[in-house]
Length: 137
Image (cartoon, rainbow, N blue to C red; front, side, top):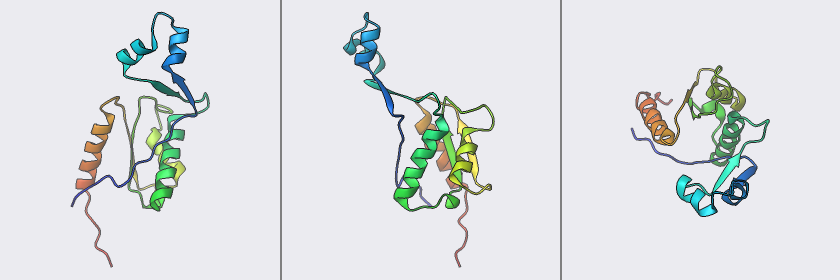
């Protein structure tokens, strides 16, 4: 059995902050120096009433709509964040509920930064590898 990434979706907050805006506020730093030190040209800023789960649900809704998959057919939510909505319940559980997934589906937050995508792929691969396909018919 093999796994593959069949589709990807994302959601960004509506407000952004550019290096030009930062350089105007912190006059000791130039736009080029900010980019060289951080590797970032633009940051997306969540609204005061916007949580990590809002972005996760928005991205999941987009992915489900594009793929034609129903949320009730999902088996697991893996959610990487350093900004959970709450300590408990986990943000993955909030996303599971808001998407209308089965309560028997798994939901797990993991707290990582830059390496989160790679660790998430590893977690998903191990979870998928341990699943057994149900016989059809």
